[in-house]
Image (cartoon, rainbow, N blue to C red; front, side):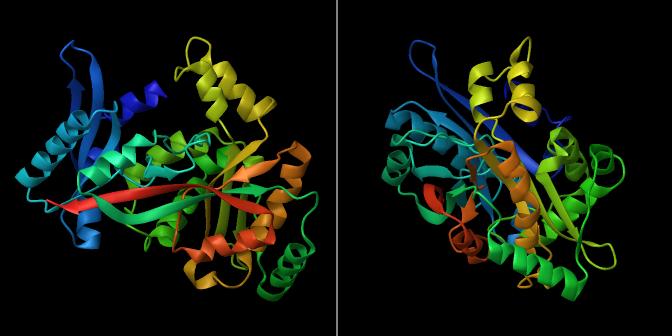
Length: 343
């Protein structure tokens, strides 16, 4: 969305600027036409946490001309070197809630709403510039079964009896005004904190995301599990895919683009569900809590007529989240890559 892009690059509206240094460039051809763009980001929190000196490139777009892509990356490298960085990596954003990774497989697939698309020539340009693979994310298509698999029901019932886990039903008001949004993002920090280059989210960023992301969700696609002491220990957050709605509105909510978004979110959605977030508190892993999340969500998805869900990007070595898909019919559809090199 154009409005979201403008907000992202407006310092007083994006709290991530408080821990980031940012440079923005446009590339023009001889006729004065814009042929590329790039953002350089030094995420001080991530650099400190992971003990490295990296400058990130993100929001990268360019025509199929090696001079253009090289010129843009040269600007990012120059920006990083002046600030003592010794490595360039990307595509990455301010935090992990920005679009990450460059598509290297699945160019025939429509990108999900939460992630970016790029043409097949993009990775060729980066390999020609000497960039190497840092890590890959995988994206899966998981087909909604006709009924909840018996194994999931059995595990779900067993761990509720054994450990005292229970579901917590929340309203939108409880998420935005009564602290459950805070609980979800506190658990996001805890669950995702050891994953590649993850930025532990400060409070003002959490407040912004609660408003931007959780504030628009339909709560029937949110599943929360608490322990016997009412502490949040697992969550699943999904939403009907907005990808086609965004195509129809051309990136603008006004004057009439909001109709497509509202229709998809609350009235007549596409057959695709996007799995935005899923996690289990580290000390409660290996107890079957994902089965409880699936057991809660699947009846709603069947009732709503979804055909399949698209996973968010999952690190290729994160088997903890990939193994549960074995309980369903599924297939890997896309792969996206982080490219990096020393500077």
